[in-house]
Image 1 (cartoon, one colour):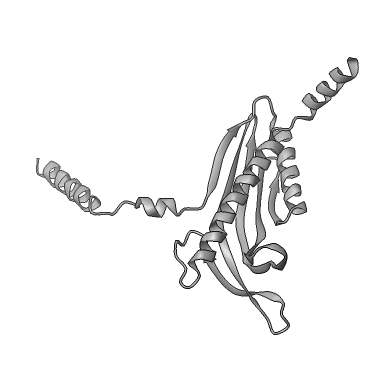
Image 2 (spheres, helix red, strand yellow):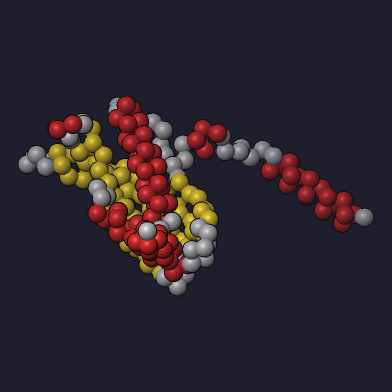
Length: 194
């Protein structure tokens, strides 16, 4: 009886102490910059989805982004890497580089489904050197930081540009992952039979 009361007193104290922990506020969750989803890909095999993921990564290398492949594992169906793209402080003909944004990209595939994750966005500051070239300063700031002293309007612009660019990248990824060469060949064959 004494042991039971002692255990219930310890558990009761632990529960009371746990109740003082502060939950994450909605503003902290709202500032989180991450895109993640699991997508069903009916009747697409793991090797085909992996091949489509590699095609998507290759298309990133040909766009305005620079992609560095860190892991390519066809057996486990995993593609990991880091991508970099420029952000500008002026638009139009006189674009001025403000810095670069790096992010981590992970694509994992299984039969009939795949998962993607775009995360860990970091802004890298650039400045003009004495030869008027824009060079990295080595200073970084996470894109999840809500405030930047001195240039809040530009920071908000970089965040919104990154969000729209990632939405476009996700659309391109979903289009590329849904490609099935067998279906395309059947459609072409039907058109020829006319």
